[in-house]
Image 1: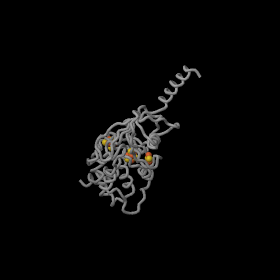
Image 2: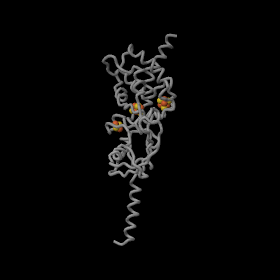
Image 3: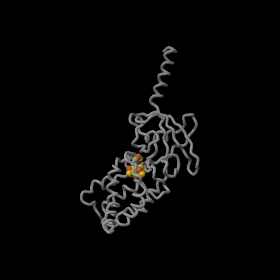
Image 4: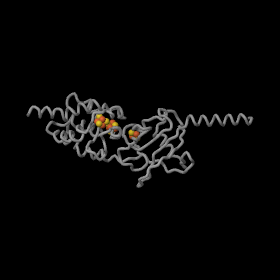
Length: 259
Ligand code: SF4
Ligand code: SF4
Ligand code: FES
């Protein structure tokens, strides 16, 4: 093979790699430190349809992980469990939009791929956040059943839809009214609360109704920024309308009748 042919092949290989590889920029933070910093990696998928989760796993499986500048790098800390869009653990901000790493294909993303931890929760390390506040909020609402119950007639669909909430927190990320230290609990609380409301007896509902009104209904600006973000595909607008009716509007009509 002549020298000229070798250089043409080298240039072509370089171009192929640039076309098929992804620059992945990650906003990182070491455990127990406050400072966040950016680090960029180059990743070439081995197969079509690889996800952000596949890329993160592959980077962490490398024996000597190096960033794009050739500096040694620590494995990237992120949460995952099912890798099947069922647990919500891998939620993060991907190219500015909250989503699940295991459900986001690299080929659907613009380059460079930018990964950040969810902004509405304290960052534990790298892409891992502490979502405890969501579970604390459910405790404040007392969103649980104290006795055996079943969805009211005709409410099976709503109960099933509410049950698929992953508690991922993506809806809170896009909500202009939600802050982790605020009294508005957002849709991550509305969805599980609605499931319980559907099943509770009228007598049992009163505590939950009061808490629902205070922590969900009153704080929601109905902007519906959260409507199309849910990775579980929950129809938040529809569920919210029916849940508000069950928890608040009937309450108002009862008060109106009394006055
Ligand atoms: S409707 Fe708007 S204010 Fe209400 S939870 Fe969704 S994003 Fe937040
Ligand atoms: S409603 Fe959707 S976006 Fe919000 S926590 Fe549940 S699964 Fe996640
Ligand atoms: S790892 Fe469970 S939803 Fe992504």
